[in-house]
Length: 302
Image (cartoon, rainbow, N blue to C red):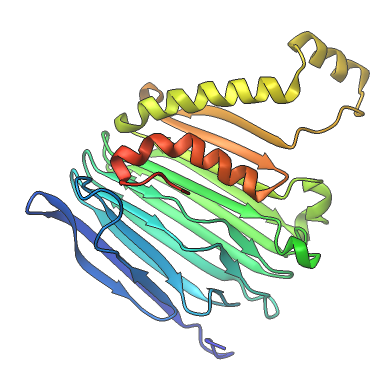
């Protein structure tokens, strides 16, 4: 056990990325047990100006009562990727203890921060809260993937955790809110989470923000529109007829996605996904984020 009953240990990590010799470089890096940052010297083409940071936890997961705080600073015109090597496992809760992971980041002018982890997987009775607070300039760029699976499905655990709360807040540098979002799955308030989620095993949210993301946003919106048209295979008139008849016999699509824009001049896009398999979401992410290879050195979720 990492934490005693009377004392909550706080694990902290921080990374600063600045221009050194004209290239994005890590100028400061701190991590404390059980958190560890791995920063490879090269990912993809050496011509790509990007720093990749892998966040790892000793033991492969987050233990009941862990409190982890990470701070990142991506200075002007720099590019940083924050990712993982496997899903983030949240182990069973001891009593009412809640495991917490908080990320704070500042993204400079014309900079890009891509947060593209593998999904969170909460074990039975786990209680987990994560919060990401980001401060951006008017021309900063962000890619955020925030997703969770139903749990250890093959072991019979399906949405069997007690609490999952994920908050993503993006603010402009003057403090004005740009995007505020919270996903809450609380067994105490909802009853059976599994009943609400039905056959869906994964929920995901993808945020694309900034001038460098405009082309990707357009491609994603077009693809989601086409995908859902094919999935539903019903005209708007037919859908209205189904609702009027309250006919629920129509089979549920195995993959559902929607898009909406936000921010001044529609500079941001949020994509929400519900799927019956984890692999289908990985495939979706690989396809939708593939154009980022030119900025990140390699395609995400390759």
